[in-house]
Length: 391
Image (cartoon, rainbow, N blue to C red; front, side, top):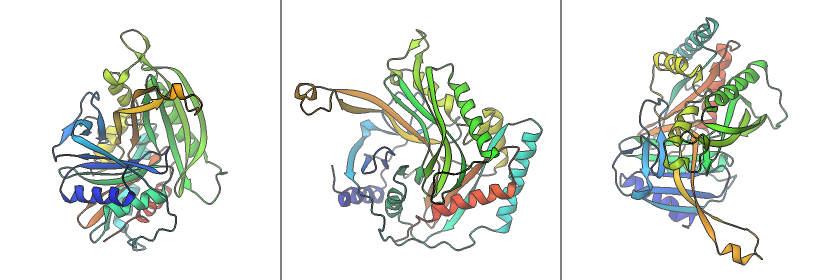
């Protein structure tokens, strides 16, 4: 394990050399930060999800995801201690960073979505926009540290490839976790500001949206899994925002034998499972096909990797049989698991030479109000602006 200083220096040097890498922290561990440093600048992709490495996938599921393969990467880690009052030189955004024209464009987009829902074409559609923030020499590693500090319970990452771009984020949403034959996912929808208490009331619009998401995920999974269990909905916090969440878990079915799948990582079952939930109703809409088509035809910009997914793919994890110190015999024996942990790419940004591109959106239902939806995107954008750093 590296010291934190050496770890971040290695990331900076790797990026300066134009070599691909990713650094990230799982939401279940608020101190261990890992990185995969690719030894070259080649672009690798995956089509069947049987490889091992770190996958970075776009929103548009017709495009192949980027892979940082374990075979061409060096893995490093560090112990990162959260420092609440760390003084980084934060770039102060102007009070008004979006024009009235941008606002009107988004209001018209939301209204068009509502009209499509009222006509019966859709039940829900998730509509987004991209906001540009001018920066002078943005400090990607500094922003990554800010995200690690401010979002201790989120999946925090910085991802770089010289041919693709530089992305950062702190996402609250799990797409899929697979270990042995077990899987976990979640339905996440509804947003409001955190005002000091988790005891909040949710409106009919948010509750309906959350139920839409949960029902759709359960429907999409039913052919691939068994023994499904749900827990929720309940309120969860992601930085300055609150969401409604339902946890979903179960066992993966082997199509060939119509029984529980023992090793979905080495077959096509993992790919099928991933695309049964991606893109989720929380970032696309319902029904999935028409909602995706509406987004691609009407948002008038390329989401790229925003609302795609990212994370460890078929990575090896060592476990011990027993954690009891007195049981020294069992501690001598361990096993290796193949694990996949994927997260939805929300609360993210793309850094370019002199600007940050922020991606924000919200779920639209028949109860939506265009002005309120605009304000929700404003709140999400301000949350991301709070971590922007320049040299």
